[in-house]
Amino acid sequence: MLKKSLFLLIIPAVVACGNTNTETTAATEEIASAETTAMHYYGDTITAEGAVDPQDFLAQMQGRDSLNVKLEAKINETCRKKGCWMTIDLENGKEMRVRFKDYGFFVPLEGVDGKMAVMEGVAFTDTISVDFLKHLAEDAGKSEEEIAAITEPEIGVNFEAHGVIIKE
Image 1 (cartoon, rainbow, N blue to C red):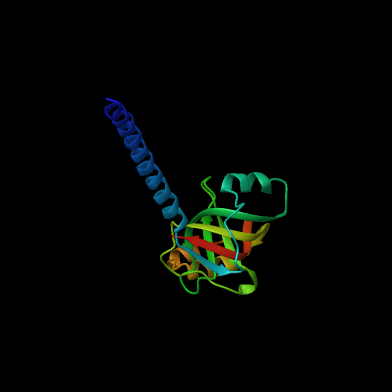
Image 2 (cartoon, helix red, strand yellow; image 1 turned 135 degrees about the vertical axis):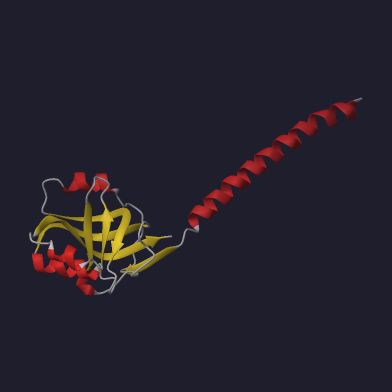
């Protein structure tokens, strides 16, 4: 009788431990999967830790001419000729151009549009001349009509990155 009672107490404990183990294993696999997200580094080696999202970035930029910052945002487009710039989505219907410090590194020409990037550097308000805007449009592969339509300089926030991480 004592053996039967002991047996009846042990079975639920074993089953409960088995379920917890399965949940723990699934959680561990999920964490391991997140940790193995491929990251590609360009320029200075940086980390993603402490990166702000576009909304926080725009709030921090309010009333400033420049800001040292680490930002995480979606890539809209990269330079199709050299990979010497990219535009990122600021989530408010606007985008920001990112160039690379001293023209010292480049990002891939294709295959990164829509991916998340972390960039560290300086954001600053700048005026981009019509000639340079036309040059950028050529780099992006825009049509002659689109390039000819550029007639006004662009005033806005730009970014010079010294390091970029592109997440797969």
